[in-house]
Structure formats: structure tokens, C-alpha cells
Length: 207
Image (tube, rainbow, N blue to C red; front, side, top):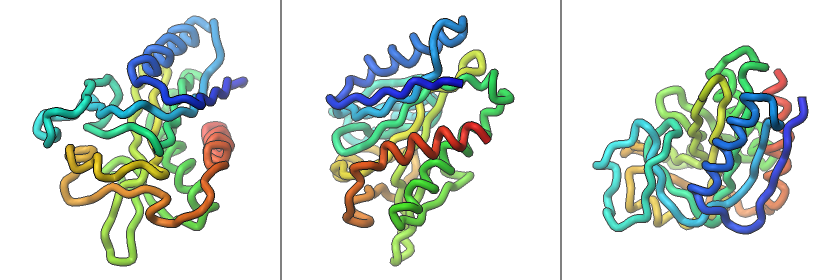
């Protein structure tokens, strides 16, 4: 099963990226193109998923767009790695839970290589890090959509992004936890992390 791997250097507009994902989905549906993994960074934007509510926007002046992915409100911008995919679940047992588990395992396994221990939470989707103080922060947001058993969208991993932007929203609708990034947790070289994530994701969706 060949999967195209695409990496964008310049920041990509959110709407443009989603249009490409949806176009690829339609092509896969009729066997006209390969599945896709796409690594990129977005221009600054806040997006609301299908379960988002208006009271989660605290600053009404933000650049906001509603989207069809699952989940609530989150932020995308510089310093955040976006891992998008278009993956055909028709070839993988039509199992949505399995693809979410594969995403979670991909992030957790990758960060283990960087000596960062994080975890998934069944009640609050995403990947979390517990500080020594006991404070729990989100470091990766997950949001997918499934159409005709083809899964797309993906996850966003905070590496060096500005954390003040989250004060303008209730991130992912969760009021009693915060948001952090990898640089704040452990300063080290994350230059190769996108390749580690791709390798682990490919391995996890095979199993």
C-alpha cells in the first residue's frame, strides 16, 4: 500500500489545506490517487470542530473558522507541527477507534524517544503531559473526520508556538487544564521529529 508523503516548507492557509485533503479523499474513493500524509505549518487561525460552542471563544476578535473535523476549538500557527492524512479505512477493517489509537500511539512513542512521557485520555481527546507540580497540559490536539470510510484531518503537535494565543479561547472546550509545548517541557533539538512521527504512524496503521 503506497502512501504519498508530502512536506510543505512555507505556512499553508487552513482552508486551502482542507480543500486539498477533501479533493484527495474524492480521488481515493474512486481509486484515482494514493493515500496521503502531509506535514505542514498553518498561518495563524482558530478552528472550531463539530462539537464546538460559541462560549469557548473568549476574545471575539480572533481569526476563526468553523470546520467539519471532530472536536472543539483550537489554534493553529507558527511553531506547531500539523500532521494531516487521508487514509482509507476500507482497507483497514473500517475501524475508527483503531485509527485514533494509532495517532495517540504515534505521538506517545515518538516523544518517548525525546525522553518526554505523555499520555492519552479517554475523556479528553488529545495527548497530555503532567508536570512535576501535577499540572496537566495538552501538547497535541487530535481531530479527524471520516467520510465513506476514508479518514482525514489529523493532529497538531505544539513544538515552539506562542502559548499566549490560548488565552483567547477555551482550548478544546476544557477549562481545568492548560496547554504547553515541547520547548517549554524540554529544550532540545526537534528538527527530525516530523520524520519520527511519519515512521511511527506508518508502522502503527499497519498493525
